[in-house]
Image (cartoon, rainbow, N blue to C red; front, side, top):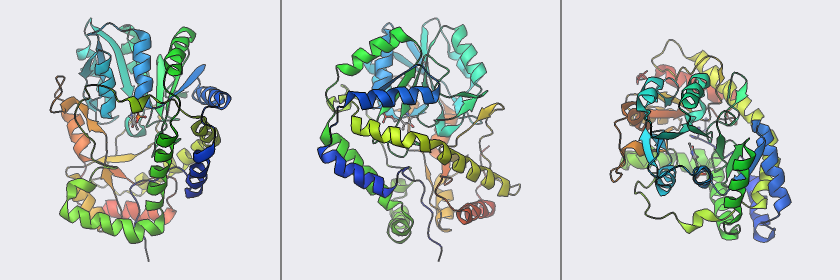
Amino acid sequence: MRLAIPRGVIYHRVLDDLSCLARAVFARLDDESTITAFESTFAAYVGRKHGLAFPSARTAILSALRAKELPAGAEIIMPPITIKPILDVVLACGLVPVFVDLDPETICFDLEKLKQALTPNTKAILITYLFGIVPDMDALMSISRAHGLFVLEDFSQCLNGTFAERKTGSFGDVGIYSSTFIKQLDTYGGGQLVCDDSALFDRLKGFKLVMAPPSRRIVIRKILFDLLMNIATTRWVFGFVVFPLLRLISLLRPERVIRHVDVQPTELLAELPKAWFHRYSSLQAELGLRLLPTVAAGDDARVKHVERIKALLRASQVRFPRGVAGARNVYWQLVTHVHDARRAQRFLHARGIDTSTTSLTHVAALPDSPYRADTPWAKSIHANALVIPAYPGLRDSDVSRIAAALNRSDTDSLL
Ligand SMILES: *Cc1c(COP(=O)(O)O)cnc(C)c1O
């Protein structure tokens, strides 16, 4: 009997979640020495001098923009696809987001369009490595530096990616990694900021320290969420309970199961919620210290699966973004850009393989936003970039099955 293959995983053992849950009820949450140890270990891991653990990537980005004191009305180059709260924080800083369309082969800024988007008022750029693919960082950094931009890297989807042997997160003025659920390093939320500039680091530390103490309720809620997702994606529970449910829902309400996690709200926030500003806890830092040394082995397994899937594909219609020479992609999510993601999802569901599209938002096209831009590749990738399972826990037989199904698929890629 062949059990269905889930679309994704939680990078913990269920037992880890259970023991963290038990500890979260009583453990001290504000032990500064554990937090500092994790901050400096993470910074060194990425190849940076300083590290600071914020409650989330969005609050880390907010703090970096505030610490840099960019003038109101300054333009920041943004990816047209990301989590919507990043747009909320950019707007809260009084900045003007300028969305540059993606190059489908790297799923990062199209370099020609980037050059055209620069104005004397462009002051910052948020480079975002979507799906764990690394673009040409020489080209991207030289354009950014020539224009004197403040460079932020959101490497939430690309921990351990490299370009010319240098890690993602170490190119810009600040790197930000979200250690939220489903990410390679998941500490029940958290935004790990890394930088080299000591003056900037000192200012950022000030922003961090004025936040509210860690919230036990929020930490427990996040652990519970991970635990439930973790149980739901174990082979037996997924195969016998979750997958049949997903298939049923996909017949009745296909829009409810096409997104990787869920459909996200699209309204811009008038005010940033207070719940975002509770400091990162030492319980999370302790888990981070324990899990960080295991991330590389997971990456190796994932990259091996991706290479095997690619090798097994016959000259088929299915193709993956090419990436660039000199880069090591970590393929946090392996995506193929198809014509019709729902149709492809149904085709693969019939073969016991669960897939999805990204749960990120096409932030360049929000209905109520005053800042919109025509970004056709981003629009298409948001709608039809299909996440193919390639995560570390897969067995070789799963990988063969996935490749065989892709070979039979009649949905050709757009690339
Ligand atoms: C997951 C993710 C985040 C998450 O940010 P949080 O504020 O920590 O929730 C941010 N950016 C990208 C690109 C992501 O994939």
